Image 1 (cartoon, one colour):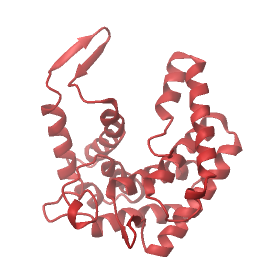
Image 2 (cartoon, rainbow, N blue to C red; image 1 turned 30 degrees about the vertical axis):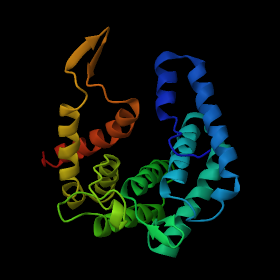
Image 3 (cartoon, rainbow, N blue to C red; image 1 turned 90 degrees about the horizontal axis):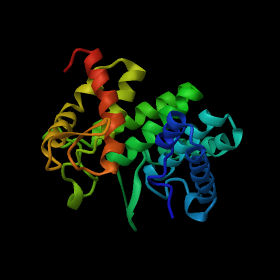
Image 4 (cartoon, helix red, strand yellow; image 1 turned 180 degrees about the vertical axis):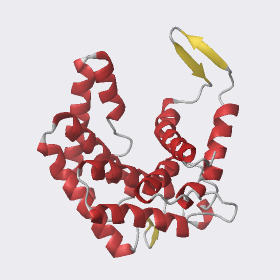
Length: 244
């Protein structure tokens, strides 16, 4: 049991678009499950897991707070944010344990945490949160880009290959939003181009209309879920800066 890949923003969108209370109840149930998970022993050690674990949890809890304004969702959010701050101070970044004697950077997992912290920052803006987010992105840019301009998959010799996970694009767009520095966007251009190209060439089928929906390709829902917001937000930032 883990908090990874448990998020509720899309489910809440379904609730607002349809009015079907089952979606709302499902989102609440996921949130309550995450609260229980966060109380288990493995989440108590700062830096004991990778950044996506409590990153996804923070994203869900923040979304539920925005939906309900129930402070119970924010209590654990404050705790998670405190963990991220302590973690960064201890290691100089959100390094995750990988082997018994090794901690490494994983760009897409760090990006999950950045995106979630930004959602929290928009609700509860504080300068130290802004600095925490930017320090995490700066750390990625200093340590996680390969010579060919792509972000690696994981900071380990056997896994230091091209990652191309679109989640890093959202992190870069967030850093640009906070600073106005176009260099953050330029750092993700190769990743952006690669993701757009792979979307056009994968799936094995062309564009088709099913009822009132236009479908392209056959890739899974997880791919869409982790790609839509990062690519859209990064694309908008590029467009605003005339960098397309």
